[in-house]
Image 1 (cartoon, helix red, strand yellow):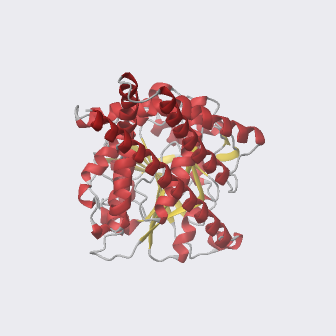
Image 2: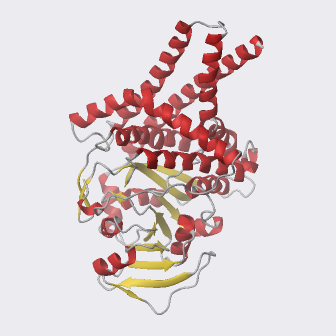
Image 3: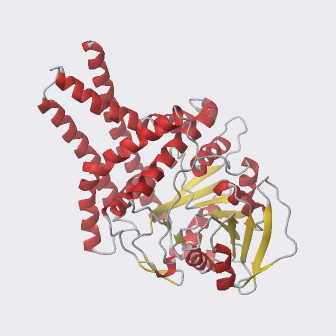
Amino acid sequence: MIAILQICALTILIYFVALSAINLLLVCLGAIRIRDYNNKSTASDFDRIVKSNLSLPISVIIPAHNEAAIIIGTVENILKLDYPVHEVIVVDDGSTDETIKLLEQSFNIQRLEKHGASHIKTQKVQAVYASSDYPNLVVIVKENGRRADAINAGVTLSHYPLICIIDADCVIEADGLQRMARPFLFDPNLAAATGVVRPSNGLVIENGVIIKRGLPKTWLGMNQEIEYTRSFQWLRIGLNRLQSMLSISGALLLIKKSVFEETGGPWPDAITDDIEYTIRLNGFLFDRKNKRDLNLAFIPDAVSYTEVPEKLDLYLSQRNRWQRGTIQALFRNWRMFLNPRYGTTSLLGMPYFLIFEAMAPIVEFTAYVLAVVLLVLGLTAWQEILTLVLLAYTTSAFLTLLSILITETSRLRSSSWNDYWKMILSVFIDTLGWHQLRVFTSLWATIQFILLRKRDLGAPMTRNPQPISSQS
């Protein structure tokens, strides 16, 4: 029995050392990537995109379900993006609030008698509207079928070769589409690209235009600000360099329409359709048997801001859904796991997401229980446990601080010294409470998925009652 406990303790120690080493490597790869990107990126590139008639037109798809509180600000923002040709397609997925009524009032949309045929099966499209004030704005009304089904419906009625998918609570930097589209001009084999996703809770937006950048005002919001900086930015860039980025946020994806249709679009029954679709997309792109020679890019200066929950119950519900969605996506694509046919996507990406993402809460909870057992049995001293806890705390804080410092070298740096020091302070608070809360929430989600077979989407996000155009 004692030998088994000692082996378990050693295994967990090796696990955390490996996790820290891999994450440090990924953050460093991300730093190298942004340095190379900045060296190759010039202002003239974006001038050519704006002025050229050869820039690829983009269809921006915005799935929406009961988004009356924020939909007007989002549409205003996308309509005003500085890009030569782009259309905006809002897909109302069976809303029961005043989403359509507000769109009618704000953009003068009128119902069309005819609309195109669908190429991907979706729930029934009930009506299609076009704006007489904005020729590039289309609104689709359909029966509820979840976010993925709404995206698929929007893509089937789109006109342009590039599809940009965002969430209904997103706002994008004015030059966001330029920066997302730029790599498609230099790489004919580029199939899809994603960018940086950051919380929008600290922004000040007027008439769809970002006029001031700030930080969330609550500690829970700040927790997510630093988490997005670390996990959804620099770790993603590092994984992308290794063709192992298996999670692209639904808040920002630019993809060739031909690739989207060939992959069948996101799965409507997925708990988190963006994670499942990213894994399947990677399998499609890097399948050595078919030799498509396609690429997936991460654009470090293309930014989409998305609303994050600042109420504890909504936050925990979101993390519960993310954990269950990650497990579901890995199970559904299990044939890719350690399959050389898919290169590093299967040999590195799939193991990383299984071992260090899906299984992380199980391992960490086991570590807590094991520490108590070893102390009770007198097999270790509290000084040794405390040393290991401090080491884990310091390592986590160091990686997060490193991510923040790298961010300060980019266009996403803090808007003021006050914001900078608030970020630094949040790093240490996050590791002393919020992290453990995420662990227990994800552990419970794992139990729900595997043992209780829970597949629903959890509690819906409650939006700010004020439109995003006046939100601060």
